[in-house]
Amino acid sequence: MAVPVLLPTTARDEAFAGVTYHIQGELVPALSIELAAMPIYFEHHVLLWKDPQVQIGIKAIRGAFKRMVAGMPVFLTEARGPGRIAFSRDGAGHVFAIHLTQGQSIDVREHQFLAATESLEYGFSRLKGVSNILFGGTGFFIDSFTCREHEGILWLHGYGNVFEITLGAGEQIDIEPGGWIHKDPSVRMETMFQRLSTGIFASAGQMVWNRFTGPGRVGLQSMYLHLPTEE
Image (tube, rainbow, N blue to C red):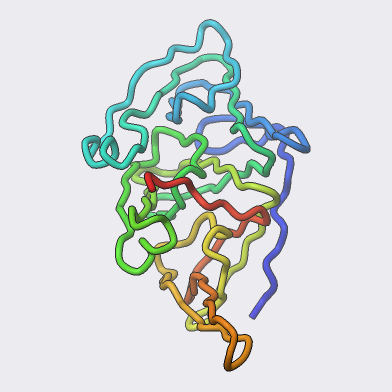
């Protein structure tokens, strides 16, 4: 199996899917986008600054009630150019882009999404089962983005630095449950438990990780993210 590779931490004058974007900053990086004909959407709290002529509106999403009950954002915000707009997340980390072509999809851990071009269709699913144990019994959401047009861009934020590995068919990697960011839909994820014991008279514990099975890409972050729960 290959070793996860560090993704680029900066970008300048990158043009794709009808927009040009830049990623700068070493500690809390910022993403700036030059908008023309292609609108983008994002969660409103990540907006950093914009040109006055950039128009901001609301983008409703399906399944809003389920997300509201779970404490997730109910609406997304959209921006239309021409003009420039910039985003950052309130945390030290790594901003990076994923370029998608028509028919491609990507699954993303909740709270990692920064922005996306309008050409990407957004959806989400709630992960239940044994994974609930890791999140206070509430489960968590996986966002999904699918390119329905010719091409699109998804921008994500990872805590710490971001690495990516491409698994071959049947290849596996075990990742600390707070350490993964995104995966291709072709990658299967399951939660694994290993019981630990320090001796016959000692108390036992257990290790938990997510096992990913290829083929496909998996993104990792070096600063583990364990989300707060209602409990």
